[in-house]
Length: 101
Length: 210
Image (tube, each protein chain N blue to C red):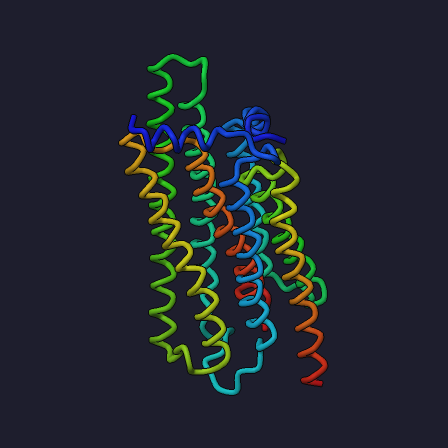
């Protein structure tokens, strides 16, 4: 999609739309912080926090960074780096986990 | 307009093989590389998590209420940034009368200023947090937690600082008519990236117990 076309789509995102996203982000942050004060089993806590962080991450990238409306090439550049990093993280966590027994 | 400025503008509007703006492609490629950079620092923190043999330990000194407020401040700066871009885009758009364009430009500048102010506020929280940690005996070389924590959050704070300088530069240049919506968009992409990195740091370092 060209920049011009992307901007045409962005015109649909109004101020109210951005504010609604900010409210959702705030609610998700409050939920995250609440997990610190509420007794949640560790096995449930980690996936819950990762899901909440993933939702916040996705909302900012999709709507505030406009990747939802923009060219797939931009998504490709971004998620290529992100994928390499996630694979590196998993590999090192496994490696260090094995080393430390 | 000078010849150099005209040549620059003509270059920007030149059609590209991808149909996409080269500066924007460069920014996304840069952000992709930044994912690997910050990811490496986060990975280092995680693999050495809980391996400090001397204190202070994370559970003893991390201040969740304070960091929650600074996280909220950074999130709101992202909202201000996207509103600044919307203002600059509307000011540059066709169809609206000159008075309305000026009004939108003023709004854009206001939200750009707010983004920089909120970013500076976030940095203030971080400086306070570092001061408190040092006061409690946690230095860069005290233990593995100190080293990995300061390097990761320090690099993030540096990125925020660079972002604030970038935003203020855009704000000043806008008064000389040298800022286009694309310039604000590129600064905004960088700013939002700094925000999403903090979303991950906040969860992995502060909220998940070690």
